[in-house]
Image (tube, rainbow over all chains, first blue to last red; front, side):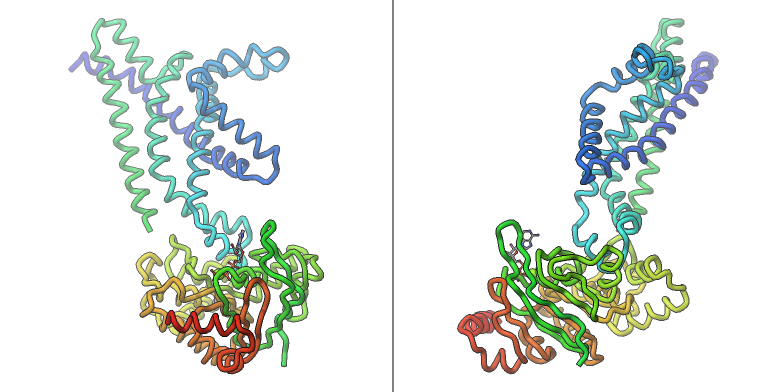
Length: 216
Length: 251
Ligand SMILES: Nc1ncnc2c1ncn2[C@@H]1O[C@H](COP(=O)(O)OP(=O)(O)OP(=O)(O)O)[C@@H](O)[C@H]1O
Ligand SMILES: [Mg+2]
């Protein structure tokens, strides 16, 4: 029991960092992703092209590579490098936020495609503006369509936060690895696994609730 | 008589498919115009051009003396909104907002477009749902309603914006035959209250007994136009006769 506590207590500190990376990424990448969705549907070619290329690159390369690029790569760019130098934690959040925005953009794009053209037409003949139609009619229906995929992506995000240990951010896995190396047994890995499972248990619960709420 | 819609030489193509060919007609205040014709003749496209869901290529559309389209030039967006704001439209597939209750479906536009105050709006909602016979469904979700009920809600929703003109595109075509009556009854009541309506329909009974004017469309033109009597009892053209025969055979 004492050993369990000695492994767990530092990990709780790491848990705070894990949850911070998770929460900041989620809060930043959902609106950013939706912005990319709208850009990818834009009639302005250059805007549309930019969004499509962005989504393609960020989804087509490893998140780990992107993480290393933001932390180690950006500062090395001649000229602007010094302005793109971030500490470990912000670098992790930036890489994750940008990456997940691309995934969410793709999810939302699919969600919008699922909405019947008749919904836009009904809103138009009732006098709603384009913005009112988006906010009052389209987005609520898009949310319902997207919830299962968003739920999936969110669970993946929890697990992906473990990657930030590579640039030295002291999250759950960072402490687990330290304990395993120090004590020569795998117990700390099991504790870490338990922590991720508990987080995802609550996330699944929240999305079940949301899906019920958006079940019309 | 007060003219509310005047269409002159309206043309519309989808790529090289010339769908509306020099269409001209007029609608007077209180008219119930039935637009009939075979599939693909351009009925829906015509209706959709009137309310800016399709952009015509040429011609003139005047509503209540204001030009939505003048010789192929569109009114500016703000003017267009104002002009089409005088019309309501009822669709074949209802297009209710599935995430909103019946009440919210009715009240969404008055609330956010008209910024109407709640007291007056709530009364209006109750009155219109009463009119279509659905007071008890006020808190229902659209998904729980029958097709006929959905279409009656859609009519009430259009009426909430107090339109001068109501457009219907095959309002009963998606319904089971036994549910068309309840929708047609509501439409007949509106006609009796002198609501101006343009109705694309395959319901010849409705066209004959409720409309005061019938347009028969064929291949993108209005081939024949007249009172129901003239069209149904004394059709002039062979095509009209053929169409009426084929449709009565089906019925
Ligand atoms: N959005 C569109 N894009 C391309 N072609 C279209 C479009 N809408 C209609 N058409 C074509 O225009 C022609 C007229 O169609 P429209 O829907 O107006 O006919 P309709 O008389 O309403 O027929 P129905 O009785 O089947 O509803 C058809 O050939 C159709 O394929
Ligand atoms: Mg049609």
